[in-house]
Amino acid sequence: MKTDDIIEKSIFLIMEYYKNNLRPLFENLGEDVLWIGPAERQQIRGRDNLVKAFSAEKHQLKFTMGDIKAVAISPHASVREVLLHYDIYTHYPSGNTDLHDQRLHLTWRERRAKAGFEKAYRPEIVMIHISNAWKYDTRDKIYPVHYENVPSRPLVHPHPETWVVVKGTDMSIHRIAASHILYIETVKHSSRFLVHTKTGTIMAIGTLRDMEKNYLGIFIRIHASYLVNPSYVEEIRRFFVILSDGTQLPVPEKKYMQVKKHLLEDDIGRS
Image 1 (cartoon, rainbow, N blue to C red):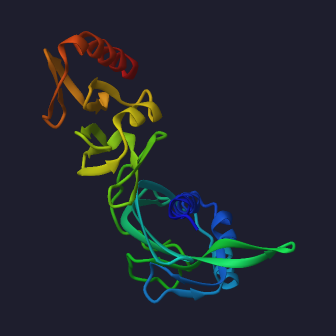
Image 2 (image 1 turned 135 degrees about the vertical axis):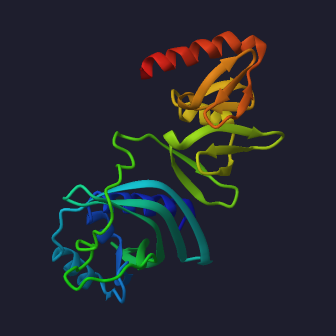
């Protein structure tokens, strides 16, 4: 059971879950799965009982996910503990939006299953724990339909978002909205780089060349050591750029006119 594959599957399942597509989640549950829900004292044991509970759930809620950070540990060769940390916005029919800083803990177990005459192994979820609890309303079953009590907030991503995925040096996986990234900076003499976002900095494994190739059209290479998000470039001078947070990054003299042209073209495209 490869850790990266389990992390990738965990992210996929939660993204589909919040699109109100529950089938992928159900297909990966163990028969004895334990659900510890977000409401007080909410526990459901067994796949059939959990599917039954969700089937009885009727709601008109919609959800928007923000950036996701995923961390995994391997307490045993056949077990993976995956922690997903993300912002989730719940949109109510009234137009109000509620924000939760949510933590989701998934325990995966590799279980042997018969496949013809050979023995095969498949990962399955044996525990789901959503750790940010709120007061429980007895009229609700799974989702906090009657929890709404906050003023309206804007949507997180009113337009389709582009996501950037990087692996942290602590082996965590970060799924970051491209619109949250200010610039990316290489760490000299290493295969590491720094992702500078609006809320902090992430040390990641890889090279700027890979990032430039994988996310072509999102970032502009202004220097051997820097990729910038043109959306945050406030000004370009000889020979540096100034970002919206005041950061100044160098632009080589030989590259200055090319960078200036790219930034002007990008600005025209966004206007």
